[in-house]
Image (cartoon, rainbow, N blue to C red; front, side, top):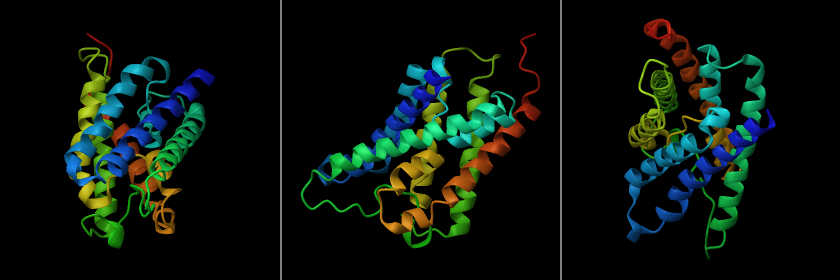
Length: 231
């Protein structure tokens, strides 16, 4: 079990460090010009690389919403959920901490939002709480459907990380303007603890909505997919 928890912490560290790092380090320099496309792609590639690296160890959830969704979809034991979530949050905070250490090495750096998620005045596009809640819930719902479908025993094996990583990129392209896209409570926590105080005040949404969406996805997929056993 310790190996799996360590893998989850390392995977979540990488996701926060690379994904949020692309926003804080690369996108902060205009001439690099990676923009939303580059940030979304960074998150997607981070998931792909970790899925191939630790997928065979822990399943590479690296996201509490995924862990809860897989548990409700009967793909993961309930008694292991707390440990996985704790490892993911610890990894996310450590990733944010190392990123903060690097970012503060630049003269004049101000944490500000520190790539945190937000709504209202702290939404990149000025979207409301209701809009953010709906978006995060729906994104997480479809993300769980994609995960469960791509890892179904009836589909070709070995390609799931690509489908899941591309889904992360697609969701980021749509979701960054709304909330800076969470989809992942551990990712949100990993950046919020180093940001201005508003990020922690709004963090509740980025736990509740992704977990709700993930839970719904975990419940719905078995209903539409039926038995996983090959004929």
